[in-house]
Structures are given as C-alpha cells and as structure tokens.
Length: 120
Image (cartoon, helix red, strand yellow):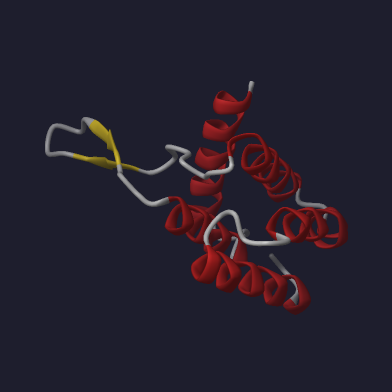
C-alpha cells in the first residue's frame, strides 16, 4: 500500500499471524479496518477486493488454505505449492506492502481469483 500508516498496520497483521496463526484474536477486524480505513481511501480496487475476500474466507473457513501460488516444471506444467495457512496469509500481506509493484499485483490478482473461486 502507499501510506506509511497502512504499511504499519499490515506489518502488525503479519506479526499477529506469525505469532498466533490465522485464528488470531482480532485478525478479521484488523483486515476489515485495513480495508475500510486505508485501502478504500487509497482508491485501489484490487487491494480493497482482496482484503474483503480474505476476511470473508477466514470467517467462513477458519483457515487460509487458498491455492494461489504455483511453481512450474521444465515442461511449463504448473503445480500448487504446499504452504501452511499462516505462511500463506503472511505472504499475501507482504505482497500488499508493495501492492503497486507490477509482479506483486499479478500475485495479488492470483489470490483474488483463487479466493473468488473458493467463496463463490
């Protein structure tokens, strides 16, 4: 995200997730606050959407087992990367720290698409 305040909030969320996992107390409210008080004000629809989908997924599943990261073999076949819930959510939050970076945006879009597919 663009502002120092928003990035501080993201870092607090990352620390909370790394310490207590995806069921950390207040995590969903933190994500909602980040969306309402920062992402919407920055007018970034991708970040706003992925934050909403993230907390909806957490509310519904009590986990973050979203398959949004893949690796390719020599023949360009894609395989999902096995990753723990808290590492997965921490990684997404890390991408949001620099959401305007081109490669990060592509990965954030992958998360958005995977979350939409899982939820709807």
